[in-house]
Structures are given as C-alpha cells and as structure tokens.
Image (cartoon, rainbow, N blue to C red; front, side, top):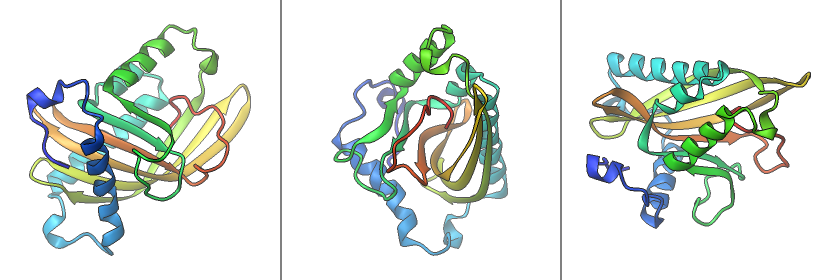
Amino acid sequence: MSQVNPTTEARADYFDLIFYREVIALFRTWQEITVVPDDRLPSVEQRRACERLLYAEARLIDSGRLGDWLALYTEDCAYWLPTDIGLRDPAATVSWEFDDRRRLEERVERLATGRAYSQIPPTRTAHLYTNMEMMTHGEREVLVFCNFLIHTNRLGRIGQRAGWCGFLLRLTDSGWRIVIKRINLLDADQPQDNNSFTL
C-alpha cells in the first residue's frame, strides 16, 4: 500500500476503488510466500515496537478504554471484518464491518454514552495474539499476520472466537500506529452474534 502523506491522511473520502484494490493486494501478498524473505524481515527494534503496539491494542479493548484504543489508529485507518473466509475483493463482497476513521469515532462515542443497547452490559473480553509473522512494506510500514483467540463473557454467556488478524502498521511522528486491521473469523461465513468491539 502506498505511503500516505499528511494531506491525504486528512481526506474523508479515502474509501474509494483504488483503496479497496490496494487493501486486497496487500493481504494477498501473504498467499504468494512460504516464508518471509530475509530482505523483508523487520529489524529487532521494529519488531519489538510492533509487538508492543498490538499487545497494547488488545489490552485497551479488554479494559474498555476505547478512546485510548482509537488513538492507536491513523487518520486514514480501516477496520475490516469480512463475511468470507478467503480474500475476496471488499468492494464486491459484503462485510460484517468495513469502517473508516469517522465511523470508528462514531461507534466509540456511542458506546461511551452507556446507552448502546448491544453493549448493556459491556462484553468482557480477553484477547490472545500469537504466531506473529512480520514483513516490511516500504521504509515506514510493517505487515503483521497473527492468530487470535478471544474469550468473551456477556450476561453469563461464555464464548470463544478464533481466527487470524492482518495488520498494516506505520511509523508516524507519534510512533507506530495501526493503518488497517482485518479480523478473519474462522466462522465469518456463518451467522454472527453480538461482535460490537469484541474483536
């Protein structure tokens, strides 16, 4: 995915066909490799910084600190929860969620009111990220793929969600930030329960 300059980052219309094509090409990269090439392995410092960011992202969701969680995302971010288990084009396939920054801000604000019926009471979660693989994407971006297991508890109903996540991370003036989070549920093509900010 191309580097985004500061003027582009502020755009409200970045979810265009070019964006969709770049996103799907980005994640299809992983279908073409067996192991990450040596020349695309991040440095030890990059890897540690990216791990810290993703562990913080999971912890902030689990503690309900969604304002702080959103601060870990860039202005041109995407939060993608597809309905398929493959890598179809998001412009031509229905998604459970495909949110830009503005939509994420609206969701966080609504949940903060305490009147969002789908999260009264809030779902308790414990996120586990494992099997992290990282690959550089240009000079200031890193692709991360990892498996996840999420333990949930809401109104005494205990559940587990599993799958893999794909992240695009970028080094900004404020440190490493999340540009894209793609959540790939193992049962994404099946009817879903209340997933509001549990993923």
